[in-house]
Length: 264
Image (tube, rainbow, N blue to C red):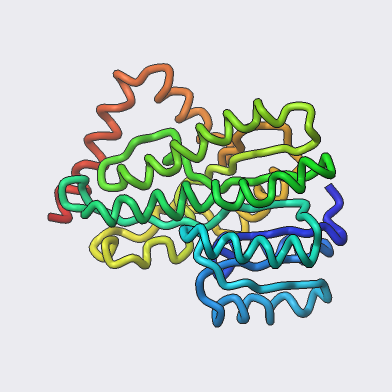
């Protein structure tokens, strides 16, 4: 896809994957709408994009709040009429056992990671369908395919994202609007800044740079696939888990539960 003058909205755009995705789109002339909770962080990203001489717009918004998404989307639709690409990237995790996490801990992850995506899709999909073009990219995780001890509620939000995206993809067939999920393994971002990860090892040697994931997101905007797993060889692990769960699940349980138990 040629991104010149395409209107691209990125949630969670103030850092990490969202920030690098904005940079990659800006390099190719896209009009970038940066959405995240903190205005000061968005302004920093906007300043970094100035060297690309493209149109940018920042809108502070907590996507877990329906009224804020309504206000944000109304501003954008009034200014641009529609968007060409929606990147639902906002998300976070809280580490801990289901027993130890509060209901609010669990609900807040679902509110941002899952319902935030739905709020944005519901606001922007009608205009995409009206012009019979556009693409939605939902940034999930390999945790959309593996239920892991310690991040069960995060996994649930990403399982939900993948399932919702698959159902919607069937509904969108023949409309000109596409949807693709990008599911990376561990990424070196501020994802682990939450205090619950304080005693956890931050990154594995196999972890990805946010720029690598950003490039996969650009690729996804022109893909007919439901899911792009990054790196691609991890798809083999997903296949093994789904095909031989009685063999793979005990390995996952042993390795991840040991880590969870050590945190107590």
